[in-house]
Image (tube, rainbow, N blue to C red; front, side, top):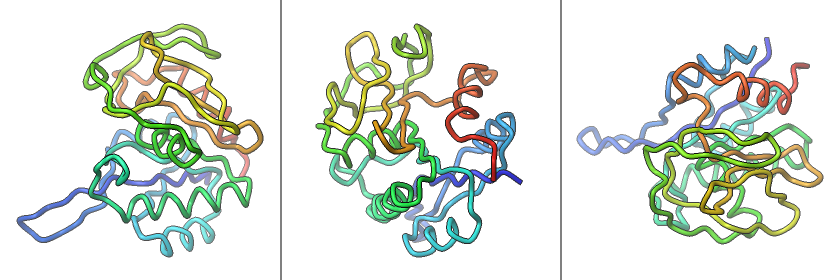
Length: 201
């Protein structure tokens, strides 16, 4: 079984006094089409590290949802969990792919300046870069126009904001669009995930 560990958004259910870990069901379907089995990761740093260490997934995905605390978000437990998982990935060589908020987390972690954007929520736009020129979805309020090494820009939107990056020496990358939200998963996205995450346990 080729497991891929996926972090989750924090949903605050005030009427029940609960903070819930949540994940779009489409992630399980998308990863299955890529040839993987999903392993949802709770927003508890120690439990997350223990789970990833014991299950030995082929890779990690930092999924969408929740603004970073640095951008006014209210889910510090998620930031803490992903910070520790990033350290684990860098130390172990485990592939880590950030999606939307996940890319924002990576940009912030490596020193890029995040800025509030307009016109990037619930829309479609073109992306141009290493993977070519294509249209995809957009669901983010925050982004960046420049990165610091060791990050390298792979794609941008028409307004110049960053849509994809990779780390110049570690198996770390990020995309701003949501492959799991495409109506009919894009063959391009499936090929990218399989290439980046690999298939060997």
